[in-house]
Length: 214
Ligand code: SAH
Image (cartoon, rainbow, N blue to C red; front, side, top):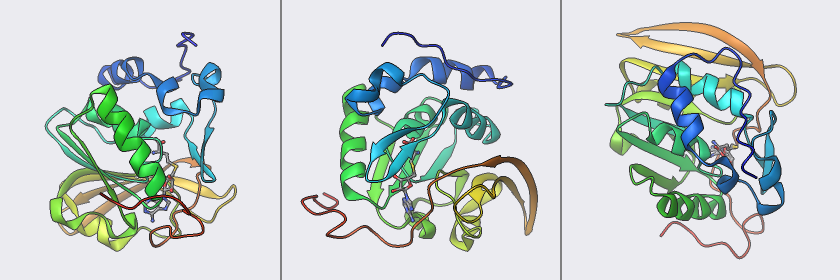
């Protein structure tokens, strides 16, 4: 622990670099991985899910072009790490997680660490979080087979959507989409590997013993 050497390659947005420096990544991974929290790779966070490699977190965050006033939606709260990074760079962060136990843990962690502008809900992030739309930026941290239409719908004019698209395995592409009126500007950024976006909220036995959204 304390070896806070992040490998961030060509990431150049100073605000993103500062946020990556500021958030204690070891607090978002299971205790047995704390030593390795700053390594250049993803780590397991339980329930078959993973926290992304720091570089990918930084890359996706940089693509959102946050200046500080934005309302951001994340799909896949997981550990809450990406949400913590976003909370330092935007005004409000809304994040949806389908596994209730992960959502609850992330909520506790974010509260303890003082990230008070993050709101977590248990739900199917494919549907977004319509009550708070439109969003200036949307980040999806699980791979979708297609770009979910509700997310495009909930994106503000000029808004950015960053999402891994493709089947599970090695064929996923990280896509950047910018909404301009009724047009979508789209480009492929990189090849990536993410856990799949799964429709619906996790229920027993998958979440046996867990509790639901408070
Ligand atoms: N951003 C997270 C990484 C999460 S891994 C972090 O910083 O730790 C991807 C997460 O997406 C998992 O927690 C998984 O449960 C969640 N997920 C998958 N499909 C989902 C869906 N339809 N809606 C909401 N969350 C989903």
